[in-house]
Image 1 (cartoon, rainbow, N blue to C red):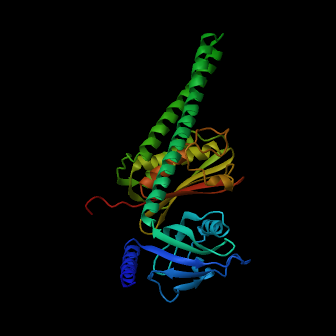
Image 2: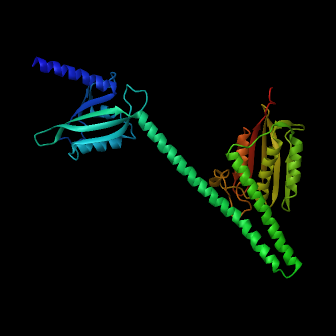
Image 3: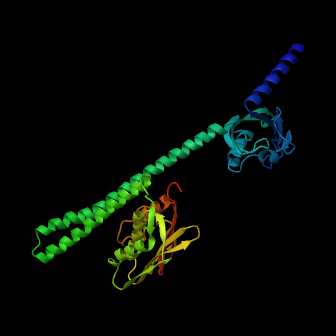
Length: 379
């Protein structure tokens, strides 16, 4: 008996060491097989001293014990517990998120429950449970799943982008090919000139599409170079308005609003002109009467806010969140392919600013972007 007691003491100590070394938590659950209250009268006894505090006693009620289980994992935890106590399984294994007092955060643990003792009717009366920390491996698994999901999503977006691009390129190409063939059979010079104008228009559309795709690809690949230099904003705005005036629809007034009588701002003049031109072109397409206003405002800290306002169709609220995405169009019948605003967002972000829209359907829109002042290198 002395030898047996010594062996038991050694095995007990080794078990404690093994449990502690591997962060294994064990407990016994004394169950009343006749319970009708979702086994809430179950008593849980912790085995092998946990690093608990007075908030989590070594002998706990069922409600106290499962309070540590994260709500996200509670259904899984209870389903497996019911399989044991209802005799559907002798042993179960599952993963759950828990937050015991000895942990600062909620962590993933691998649980195993097994029937230890039955009552005289063969119903489970004592269940043993142990769990081990798998948070690190589970986090890696979840990160890997998220990465795979992101890759799959990116692949789908790429396929959609290529499909949209292919469709947009084919549209002007088909027109060019079709009307070029009709020119051969034109009966008079007037008809031939009409076909020529259609071909010319679609050729310009195709060139603009290719340029926009190349610009957007450079922006998304982060290879766009921004060259900062002092810029006379009023002069640049005057040039942009002069360019826009050539494309204004009949009856639409173009208004230029200068925020300052003199304004020299350090930025990229080519990209700034491109931004104002893209937004003004967008306004011209959607404004048939009223006015289009192009201007800027100066804010403290040498920050400029540019805007393009129109009295056009306006944008429904539910479509405003999609405006700055590739191939996004408010009206499928409007001119353009929906890349201009995506390019604007990419350029403004690259230049350290922000861009947004204010619009009410039926009353017009205002596109606004801000740019910060850039100090010369070395200053």
